[in-house]
Image (cartoon, rainbow, N blue to C red; front, side, top):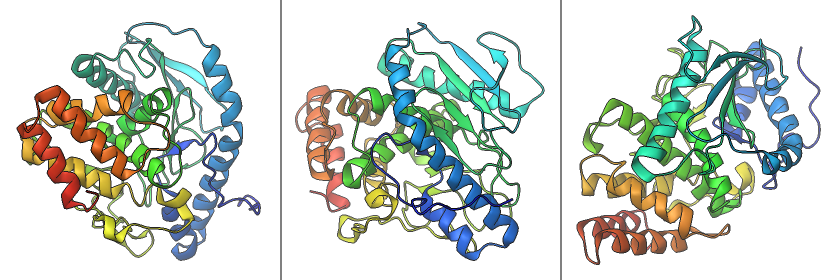
Length: 355
């Protein structure tokens, strides 16, 4: 059954947002171009996301009172296709694998993200205080999204026609958990250029989580966010391309990837919270170009520059230009003025037209 659409369905507020991996413009395209079944799933997904957006302020308040657990501590819950969180506990830290792929992928993905932050950057979990990594799988009926709600991860199973289960892509898990890191650090406003930086940081550390597990050098990686998330029915490699923004997908139902790859083509409209998912292609490509020029493992020098910029050098309203200047400054502090790393960072931002 299709939920009744309220007048504020498409008003994506920047106050207390939940952070979904599937952008609103993709769901809107399904509603316009899909058949009745796909439209139903897309409308229901948008409605569920909007309902959780309304609960976000209370969730954030409870998170502030939580006592951190310390160390790597994962718990996976099963919502059993309901919309109640967190659900039933199905796997705790140290327990063996289950027969449920979604449970195991959520558990392993949370661990891989924790390990990236802890082993490469010395960060102890999302809040740097050992916050427990909680995940809920099998959320809703054929729910086409995954999101961070301020305290935990939530994964839908996908509709099976356009989207597979949302735990299938490791970088999606790393992306959403990184929204938690950003929340505890720069807390970038989820609107306009600060919001696009917020999304880009999640793409950066999501892709680095995947590359690190695969032990890939920058030049061997696919740089696709959400590879494997689409079913074979979709014409596309993933939901975004950091290497070639605007070329991740071109599908009769999902539409065409709208991301610009240069600041001259910045989206200036009001949709998508002022283009937070759309314009993230610009800083995404800047990171890709810097990582390629530096070479080797992207999570090492390039990732370290991006991490320290996020936690120490950005305010909540940082725009692209201020961020680019901060990245260049941090590269100099970490690796020296006029170092290969600093030159690569500057070159990356220059090539996308920000500096």
